[in-house]
Amino acid sequence: MELRGSAPSPFGSEHGSALLMDGPNLILDFAQIRSDARSGKLSVEDLLDVFDKLRQTIRQLEADKRRLAQRLAQYEPAAAAEATTPAGNPPTLNASYSVDAENQRRQGRRRRKKSPGRTPTELKFADAEQTKDIYPAGVRHADCQLVRERAVWRLIDGKAVRVGYRIFAGPDGKEPRIPGVTPRCEYGLEILVVLAFLVYLIGISLDKACEVFGFFCQLPLSKSQADALLRQLANHWEEEYDTLCALIAHAAIVYMDETGWKVGNEKCSLWAFASQLHRVFLFGCHKDDATLDAMLPPDVFDGIGVSDDAGVYQNRFTQAQKCWAHLLRKAIKLALLYPGDAKYQSFLDGLLALYRDGKRSAADGRLGEAGRKQHVAELEGRLCELLQPYQCEPTPAMAPHERDFTNLVNELGRLMLAEELFTFVLEPAVEATNNQSERNLRSPAQDRKAGRTNKTAKGAHRRSVIVSVLQSLRANLKTFSLTTVVKETGRWLREGLSLFAEQWQALQEERAKAAEAAEAATANSA
Image (cartoon, rainbow, N blue to C red; front, side, top):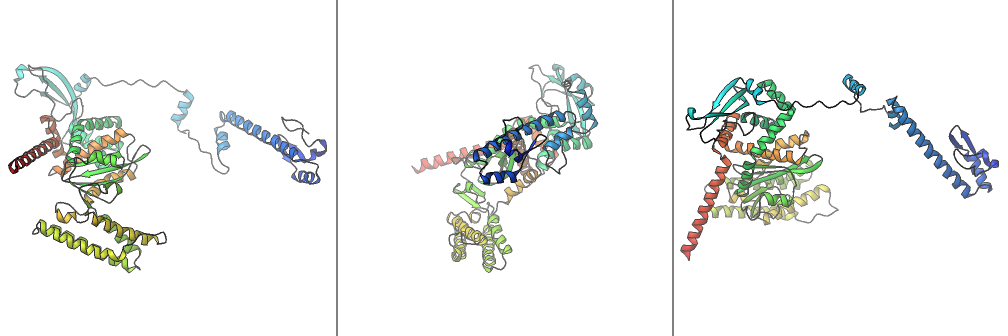
């Protein structure tokens, strides 16, 4: 007997009963093989030779099966799916079952339709519902000549209206700007601000933002157009964003916090920095020393940093305030999860009493510098008494909750020695918690949970610019609304100087005066 596609069987004719052929398949009579092997009629080399031939046969059969399945797939797609689908599971195909998809499959691939391109300005201007003439200030209209026509979408009384602007230049050839319109943009600044507010502050998608404009304002806006408008707005506000970063680096008090973010498939971070009047968001950054050095350079920032006790903040600032809310939450968690352990509740009571007494001392306007230092010394003494009975090093033999409690005790002791727990008592302008930064991150965190992060690094930077400017305007304006934001940003276009640039100039003038006063004092003392 011969194996399929191989040399004669090593068993020979007298052992042929051990091998049977069932069509193309080989069937081994294991009982006969076992009997022949025990009687010495079969050697190990014979068995290895047979197994090798069987392996070759199986490999050939699998190749035949794949080849036949590929040929069959052209006529019966279900057969190809069954060949790769585990037994008992229904086949799943990626092909669409719609009529349009079937028509496309029957017609084959067609050449992509050529885009008609941009609509000429003449046609847009002809469709304008209103027409306005723009003349340079201080020049007689008779001395001006028409140089350009532009059609711009504007929001007027809540409705989108296409306005045709006729731009006249003076004798010097300088063209005036259209009020409330960024350079080379066919949409008013109010439309860009509303779009940025909906997408980045409210947190709705570009598709839904376009539907909102269409439903409420009758503005035809596609997703690609909305994306381009956000890109233009970010480019226009890039200088303001850089100014905000400089203002944060020179601030007296900076609150900072971070959370997770994604750029494409890469896991990264979102870092938020806040001072009294300014906000900076870094979407898609890395939580490391390099990012913090770029944002708060050690040779520039000499203010107070308010943060949690993450490793990147430790031993970082000349003065620091660690967030009491983070510390109290750890103690509250232990007291609630393990009510049977009285020491957790007793420790929480003592820690809350310290925190509340510190808040009262910070709010006491009668205290001077010496009085505040005395109160801090008393609070630190009480904290030492609270921590002393529980101070020890965590060991593997401890239960998880006991190890967490020991780590909390050691953390409080370390922060007290670093003088980072009661800075808010010495400096009443400093808050005892980092809740302000956490509130700033609440909306972006919801966007992350919903999967509305960024696909590219450029998109993350665009988001950083727009969110930072809008949130800083929220902190500066008495009323944060579309009217006030458009009025303020329109003034930037008209005067060429933003609110943040004015604040930066004022800061530089104050620092220059302080430096001059210091030099004068040094000269007088000499």
